[in-house]
Image (cartoon, helix red, strand yellow):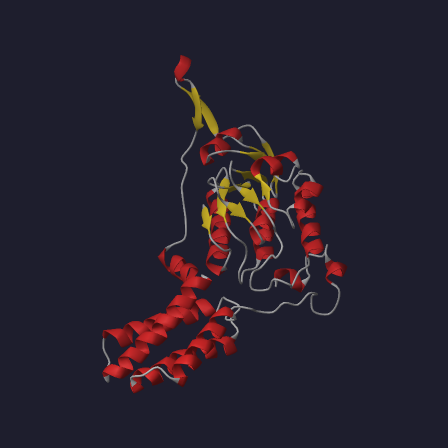
Length: 329
């Protein structure tokens, strides 16, 4: 299953559905192909719990080459029964976990969490701890024991797991994933069963795309401009409908992003300021005001809470507790 982009609600739901579906079908192995810059408005604890309760082994492969696993994606990597990274890809830093709440969990608590997960999977806790604040390439991640191995392509990972023993919620599972085909110089190892690929559906992909900060901002500004343009035409036509649709899309994205609404109001004021001088047919005070408001609003649009400690006390006091509400955000 392909997990591209931020671990937002659509991608989190995709992972959860994939784990549930793999268990319902009795699949041999579930591989998550991850390339993610972190979490956004998603509950990584729910995903970790699903992995730990899975009777089907879950492998995370950070790939293809050039991919990364940062933030909550690094937590998912350590929670997996098998952790692998492709050549040219990287792991970490895991802090901040969520981009919409960058200060909610401190780096030491993230390191403790990664170490605990890695230790439960037989990986080096100290190596996993390093990924809390450092970005490790494939070779370095293998060297310090933060991952189980490095595999250049997905097929290589699958066939290399043949015969491996993996501890799951159902007990020890001996994987059978490969067979030898051909003769002589043509002999090679290949997968011994069907491999099914899955990714976000159309609806999930739309929400995932709208949750991109750049896309949501572009739609917001473009929607405002189109609505103002329609105002000057004194009618309701294609531009007005397109503008309304763009604004709706931007608000869907904003619902998952750490938007500072006073900054959004500045963007609106900036567009209205331009509209005044467009109506007057000149460059004057309102052009300057609109420029200043648009620039100020644009640069401060995304902020969000930056609490350095969890509600009710020190973050370090509950680093090992699964029930801490601050970990799930």
